[in-house]
Length: 327
Image 1: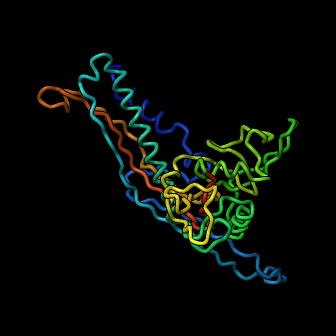
Image 2: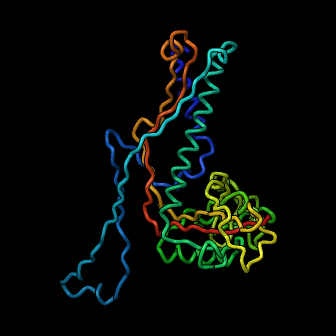
Image 3: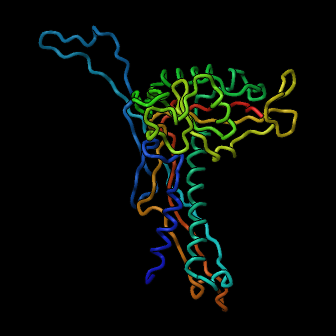
């Protein structure tokens, strides 16, 4: 405890990295940068195979050059942070434990801040939107999730050239277990998750031939999608958006008993998003009573500071699925 900040740094980092949903390995392009405000990703766009005749090699001659293009995405690193006071009274019994607990809560706050930054980037930058049952507007949505919608969005992602995130889960020797095809991922609210579970062809993670491959929060798979339930999406619900005129909302959740609540799920392909961190990561900053507590050393502080950015790498590889949910 000669260097308490080191202990508290570990306390905060453990809270930040605990059970990340949007930032799981392989879901984003990760980058650490040093001494810069801007970060840039790039990828080489795919090209169509074209006419085989154009690629036929003549005697001693080369084919026509294939032109390729590079897509560049630039992100701006932004700083985030928060702190709280720890009163001297709260530290009277066990000052180390009190500071550690306050620091842990700050780390949990930093974690949710990171998650929300990534979530909001997905929500605001998708070029693909699917309303339940294919209706035209949010104000027409009264249907919950369906396999027909999942198939439609799966085709949309494949046509856009989005790479699947997962590999095939091969059949195993267990009873009542199933192989799972290579899939895209879909994040949903806990209420939508209950409707996903009710789909005819939904397979629970417990039924995977190898359940260990499941992502954090994954509940199962259906129609080329592996479903992740997270309460981090409850803030993205659009309350009262579905018009009741001419529709029945019986059996659907409704905040005002007149309109269906509309939930948004996020479907993603591989490398749809980039997340960059300023080298050095998240800092835990603890100030003692002597440093910050005023004339009578009335309080200390603990907080976090981090620098990061999240940028959509390919908006065609993100789809938003807007649905009502069963009550």
